[in-house]
Image 1: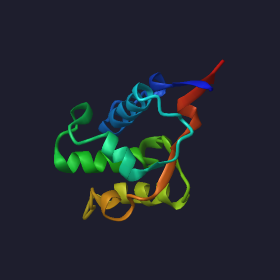
Image 2: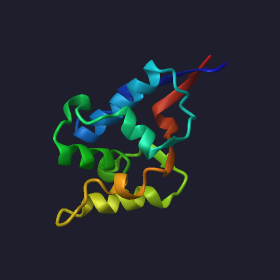
Image 3: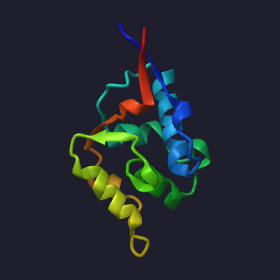
Image 4: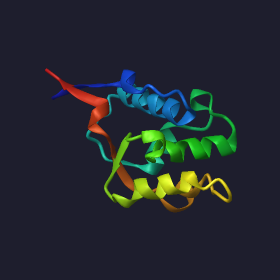
Length: 124
């Protein structure tokens, strides 16, 4: 069985979306989840309940989770099977006028992604 390490130290930003991703990697490491696993958005959200990493406000949590899955602020944490998902989330995060911070929960819970290999490594 291959051993692996999550590169939590590679996450330099300290915004809520980045804090949630760090917490997700810590969750995966603690539970020995292989970095090649295919996750649904629902599985990711279930691993990061509201309040994780101090992100408690309802609206802020919804936006932060969506931002974590986007390319906003040059994020590249996840690789979606449906390549359009990252663009959808990025564009939606840019809309400050009438943005639905829970679009991900209403429409995309079954979408699948993997953790970008930049954030984990195989060990000998």
